[in-house]
Image 1 (cartoon, rainbow, N blue to C red):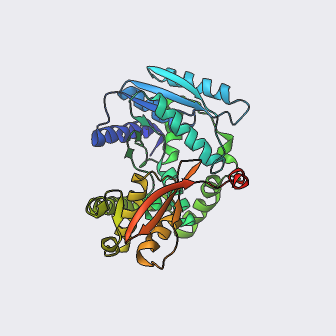
Image 2 (image 1 turned 135 degrees about the horizontal axis):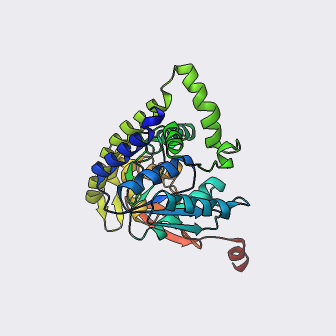
Image 3 (image 1 turned 90 degrees about the vertical axis):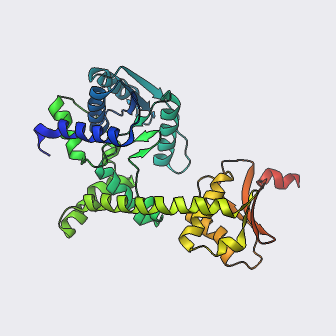
Length: 328
């Protein structure tokens, strides 16, 4: 995309997103002040009444000033409102995961029922697919980010990062350059600056686009399997339990999706592939083994998947701590 056409190209992408998903007559944009979110905000504000939501993670000494500058940028490009939200991040899952969790929670609380547009680009999608491949997270992770995952919208997933930078130039905007985006301690930074350029060189270019296409193809397959799994789950439920004998007859990919959905419906959270496989073994490799502890938001009780009389069951039990042991 040439520089003179950058804004027009982004506008076309946002209009196509709105046409495809019909997300309403008002929207919010998550604005960090960087080129991706700033360019998206400028384009979105020309199409509909737009509220800019700026999350201050307080991770850098000047974060308040950066957030305030982003707020002013949001108003200058035509947003009807711009709000700074200050958050305290935790430590669960590492700094990147903790910041992401805090950010999404804050955006969800502040959006006032409106959809929230995010500035993720095709480059971000390619990085997400590579991360999924490297971690062996399965097809759900490799399928990448969805363009519309209510209330989150990503209209720029087909747009290269260079186009957002060019759009900012075209509009005379000076985006903030997050120093974390150049910090090689973060895995995504090394993927962006080392791995993807090497793959582009070795494979002759077009790698980011190819990874994004792979995500799209896998997402279509995953959606179909998820729909089939939801139908199968309805027939296998026996109150809150699952019929193990009938579950064992399903193909592996479908069976594990049924188990995942059943666990989520039962209150599980943060499920891992290892946990799902262990629960699957209660069906396919039953030898009298004990229950499987699965991810749960409960602090004092844990969620256990077990097998009884041929049925998969879920129950909670107290988390054993040193304090509990001392009392015992």
